[in-house]
Each structure stands twice: as C-alpha cells, then as structure tokens.
Length: 164
Image (cartoon, rainbow, N blue to C red; front, side, top):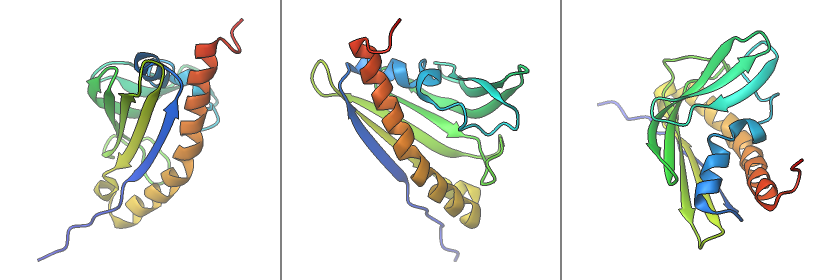
C-alpha cells in the first residue's frame, strides 16, 4: 500500500474596508490594478495582467507584443462570494496547462462596509512531491504581499484616493 502524498495548503486572509461586491470586483475584474506587472511568468515585458470574470475565464498576462500567457483557469464562479481557479504554473514558474494546484478565494461580508477575504492555495500534491513542495514554499512567501496590495487597492479606490 502506498501512502497518499499531502502538502499543506497555503492560507492567507485579510479584512478590507469595502463592501463584498466591491472587494470581489477589485480582486477579479480589477486584477490589473493591484497585481504587480513584474510578478509575471512570461519571458516578455508584460503590458497587462487581467482576469476574465466568468466560469471558464482565464487569468492572463498580455505581453507588449500581444502574446497571451495563461496563468490560471476559473473553475468555480460564485460572485460576490467565491471563485476558484486552476493555477497552471509549474515549479519552474512556467505556464503549464497540466498543472492543477488550485487557488480558492472566498469573500464574506462583515457588515455593509467590510469584507473578509480568505485565499487558500492548495492541491500542491498534484505536482508531485518535490515540485509541489517547491511551489508551496514559493507561494507561501508571495501571497502575503500580494493580498496586502489587493487590500490597499480596494480601500484606496473605494475612498477615492488616487482617482483623477
């Protein structure tokens, strides 16, 4: 009998001072407003990072020359409460449609003007022991700063700061 490999999920959460629908919109449709363009996997300079906000939609990096690189594919779409996507990046940080770790993001209203956002990146074992452990370590170090960038953007734009 062989043991089933299990790699612990990465869990990050943040409370934002924004209504649930707005927080969901900033995280998904507004991805390009908070995701840093230098956090891409494409070898080409990134012009735009975006998410197609729908079931089957893609998380895309679009290079200056128009080349599209798929980062993930949305497999659950329940606005404004939840979305899940397949994270289609391998342990060498290259696009790979065979990769099946998942990023599940849930939004819970905490009153009319606050939202708890919980991100769980899991199923690293689908990548194999070594690659899964490597990816888990990398995203455990990366998601905290990215989630904080999202929170700042959601709160900044809700209050009108930075608007022209």
